[in-house]
Image (tube, rainbow, N blue to C red; front, side, top):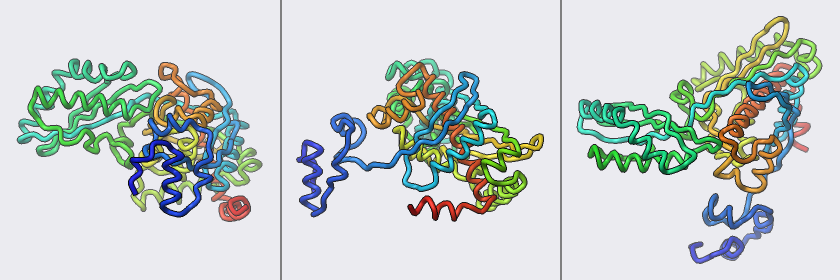
Amino acid sequence: MDLRGYLSVSDRRKGVEDNIGVSLKNIGNYSINEEIASSRNCENMIGVTQIPIGIAGPLKIKSEFFKEEFFLPLATTEGVLVASVSRGCKAITLSGGANVLSKKIGITRAPVFVVENILEGKKFADWVHANFDQLKKIAEDTSSHLKLLEIKAISMGRNVYLRFRFDSHDAMGMNMATIAVTKSAEFIEKKVHVKCVAVSGNMCVDKKPNFLNFIEGRGYMVSAEALIPKKLVKTVLKAEINEIIEVYQRKIVYGSALSGSIGSNAHFANILAAIFAATGQDLAHVAECSIGTTTIETVKDSLYASVYLPDLAVGTVGGGTGLETQKEALSIMGVAGGDNGKNARKFAEIIGGAVLAGEISLLASLAEGSLASVHKRLGRG
């Protein structure tokens, strides 16, 4: 079936209905601007898939830049997830809030070039280092919102990978980086006469679990922590501290090591996917953003919990963040639109706190043995 002849979303949807013999009345029922969505976000658009959005919170966060309470929009079809994150938010907020720190690493793109041999590879890497300022100008000329921070050359055999790292302000910046690196690669090919085989050589590393981003970071590197008194562990989380610590030790430490997991956590991906879907982030980035680590221990007769997310590729402008429903979800947290990089950083820190809430609640549920019963009660209606 060739959809190229259908010019509008409704005509295209009707063409599919007539050709396949199905009704798409719900896919065709939506409020977002289809002209914008079909031209910027989705080719051959025929409608939308709707995901329920729930609200968790309030969650109190204490950052270097703000101290506020937030409600968290979570788009999910997994029953119990919103309730669980809300319980974690309650435990954290009643304990005084979560401390959150972040560091802007920047978005990366790494083209791969082929050279004659390792000696030529060394010369090429030296040339890139010597001509950084010129490459910086070429890259930054593609966007007024992009700053080239670094080019790191990594060689293996006849392959040279150039890991470009950018500050993309409030945008996640992957498309901006790709355009900038493409222009830079064209200049390199002309000047050095080495072939760029691919603008992405899998050293970015984009949308794949990997140790490079786990160590060096990508997007934002975020840490969040909370100290929950014994009484709140018992009354809110319905568990004992020693029970939660045992689950953490045997599940997250031992289990993750035995399975060869990159990072060690209970379910970062659950919270990330729900927030990403609600706010118009690139959903495939959950594959890399969920590689973080959770730590649990006893401190002063209280439960200490922390999460470390070294690779959080998010933005508040560009991509799907401009769609009406996604923009409203960002507005719930007060981070919609651009503000010289401040909104995206704040958003990343809110996500760090949300992930912490999700980890605390799930570990407590496992410790008290209620995971199956709660899913049966809430997840099955």
